[in-house]
Image (cartoon, rainbow, N blue to C red):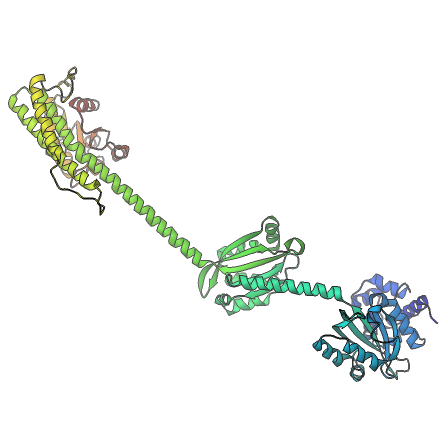
Length: 613
């Protein structure tokens, strides 16, 4: 009888002989078997025996029967030794002589002790085994593979191995997953067919497989749910790049060629994506897109963040559309390095953002327009109020300085008319700001301010007679020094003013100071007078701002462009009815030298003129 060591020595000699007949080195044999050279060296050194599956593979590789590789002793004994050498990994190992319908258990664990005796007829073994398979479909497959006549036909057809994973009940009726494998060999005489059955318990493997399948189903379910929101969703692995796809119907919009490419590649980090880049992604976005989906970038980002996105443009149905790929850690990312990527079109979002941007810009324009309208309204109100107020102050100052009673009456009458003009303006302001709600009742009646202003003027006349017209409704103060005529005597000043009352008041002041004054009613007339003025021109221009035809800003800009340097460089003082810095700044930007705000006193106007002539 052979011992295990004797069998290893016999097998080593057989294997070495067969290898040398082929002219192979140990490295070449190892490569053909898909194992290490060290394993081959151990076999040929008598250090170990390969398992029965590897023995069958070697026999097929050398194109010999299994018995030709085993030592030349009694066949069953040799087969038993081989089985015992690998029996630790099997629950049961059985030698079956299919020709004689006999079997012999070499190894049998307790969980299968209820099926058969240690030896006997194979058909009895088969009958009890198939009745122990609880699942009907698995039982049918068991019959199709392991019935005696089927096995004989398989052996005659040249098959080497038949195998089936199925459940079988143990002695306590508890089902276990097992793998039943039959390897065909022949007796040395080649007259009898022998099959070696190996039964291996694979409960743990099946549990892992089922768990893996459940995880795959769960992931696929997640992907299917996500595909309702995304055009394409896939599960991938950072280490291998292997992908599992699930597409929504919208992915077809990118075109058949692109769909074929997307469905064809199996690795999200492979070069196959390069063709897709060229075919789909906008040329300006290719480099950033390639970087964002590279293995290094995806790995770095998912190590730091739960998710990140890549935005780019894609050609869809000959139109450039905005797309986004979102990379998200899978639930088991920490242990598996799996991640999910979803691709979807975000063009509607961009359209919505664009629409909102336009609406925002429109709102801003409206606000600015309303702001401009408000500012213009305030400027206009300031002008409309300060202009008659300037006339009132001017006429009262003229009345105060006049020695003739007729002149005093005239100036006071003109001041009264200016008050009436201001009353009209105030009525308009009240109408403008009055509430217009449904619950507000507006009564039309005379506004008391007109009467009040007339009373003010009347009382002013009375007071003027008593105190010499040097105060209006207040205690007498020291008289303001009267401007001297000497400094402005003979100066030529152009007054540009469209309001008659203001022109009359300002003209009276200038005349009193000995100024040679000429008047223009608007900017157009002022420009003509400047162009036609004698070589000497004017010493100064008093320019109103708000005028018809051409305002003071435009008139000033054109004066500054005149070819006559004397005219173009003349000092220009703005007569403005606005207290806003913006209008003062605009006056300076237009080329004016200074400004004086209405209403002004004679001394204020005098001092301003003197500073420039």
